Image 1: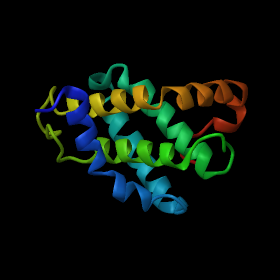
Image 2: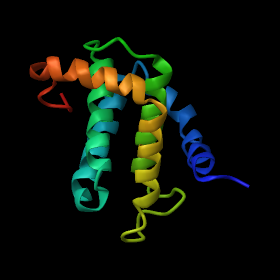
Image 3: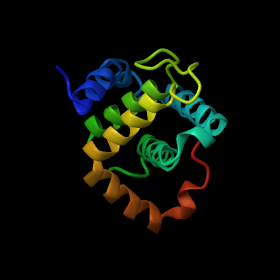
Image 4: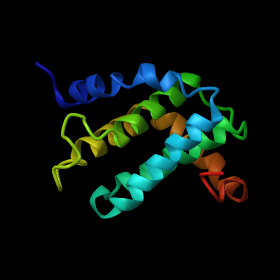
Length: 140
């Protein structure tokens, strides 16, 4: 059967084909980021550590889409968009309407994505810390 990482990756992969449609479509990407921020803000108390990870994902996708940050593989952006799509989907492994548990799988996908892409995300964090004035509003 599946171990936890395999199950999470299998679930996330369902969203990767859709994620590719967002590359090169700034309005679609902006709408996605708005939905992510809205849902994350609404459920911040349930997200724990996933809150900061989501913000990092949003900042990276935004900086990449605006051409501000280019030191990342397009496949990394697609993977992150896939995780964000999974996060906003109300119907996934554990449906979001199940209070307390509904975000558990979302947080697991976010954590799995962070672990999988840790090197590139660490590089982005370093870049971000030296370019904070360009990243004031993640939804611009």
